[in-house]
Length: 141
Image (cartoon, rainbow, N blue to C red; front, side, top):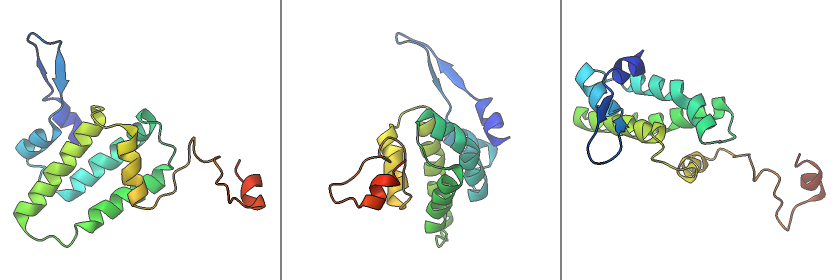
């Protein structure tokens, strides 16, 4: 519902360059009064999580990705200054917007997942190190 309301404000600009569309989630959330709620930001991110994982071809289970997002939100749970909270929420909306508009690349998102110690599968799941044991060699499927 939040993204639907924000997407109503999609602006299309034309000029000498080709047509460009921007979502402006952070600005729209602030104008609608949603920017004060970390819970709404969290719900927006969780709602878009399956789409982001599919678009960027990241082979991480959705519950694990949600766990990473929850951990990132909990890292800032101690913040009490309303100005800092507002800045963090706007930054969160900007990160979501950049992710949805493909301003980020797959390695950017993989770095976020690795920083929070989520084992990432995918094309590297079958790679073995030179010191791999026999069990690892047979269990790599």
